[in-house]
Length: 66
Image (cartoon, rainbow, N blue to C red; front, side):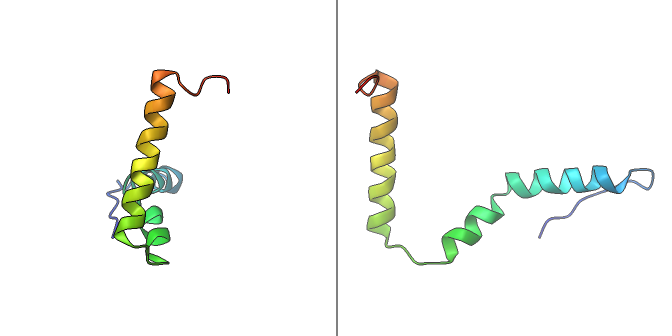
């Protein structure tokens, strides 16, 4: 549950902006999407490894101009 401290003189637009930033930083939407379907731990680990390999190849310049 997100709690936003707003001052009396603060407008609703500013409070909404604060809420949206807090919502995005808390990764709530990502968690909800992950909970929609169950993925095995081995599958999640495999995707993490593949992402790391991809990032490493990009960083080292292997995948520049295939």
